[in-house]
Image (cartoon, rainbow, N blue to C red; front, top):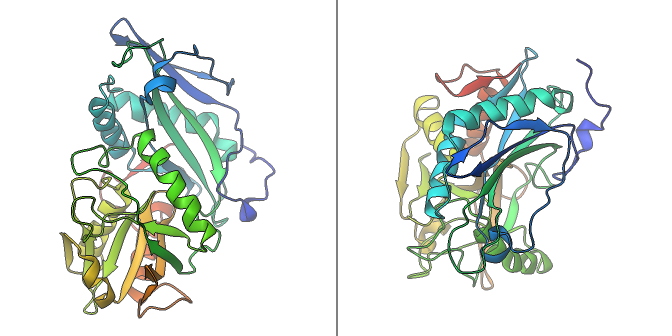
Length: 341
């Protein structure tokens, strides 16, 4: 199979149309068999539930070319499970988890020429999503839905790559304590757009959101979970019912404990203790880990000892180990790697 002629090493994190996408529809209480199509366009009624009441959820995962030339995907079963949880929270019919994984495999196979070569630094981003499609004018769930998957080759999420970021403590709340922060709903990200645009205008890469109830505890950014490293090498991740359960974070916690013999703590993290950590980072599918060098809290700078030049030593070990597993350089735990081709 011949790869597409793209400038793999200089791809940004943007949308490039690929050859194929997957689509399945839900009607009369059941999902159809689904199919691959070459049409990237979606035609919906003007009153579709997704337009009127934001009834939509999505996922994000990647396909990689491993060192030995295989195309693989990282833990798609967990994306399937999380999407089902998201759908149920918004009163949408969960797409069957086994069919989700099969659809991912089918879509990646159909776009294999767009999976970047090993060593390029790029990956094939996979975006499954679901939406209410029939006309809905009263406030209620839709009766019909569409599940789709498209792919796009991407470079690093943050343009600076592994260079440490400067972020700010946001005045906005990302999610209510009993709201939808724990699911991957489109409405959560719409709420974060004004905050991230404002942060960028002020020269920051991202926001640090605090808990909405007390505004004393660290939660996450608009699109990634936090990790912190203590001075004695313990990995600490914030715990909250309104944080999205990141698959990358969950994987890093396992890697830290079982591959690097690090102590791991998932607990509430107070903003007041952030100054005492040695390293910090943002983790998620898109970025894997992006180190954080400085956090600005309303003019007060919290400078991490790891500095602004490169990843801290523990963060780098975590990054190298997880990406090594994803790329096939390091043996993966059972079930983590789904071989596609």
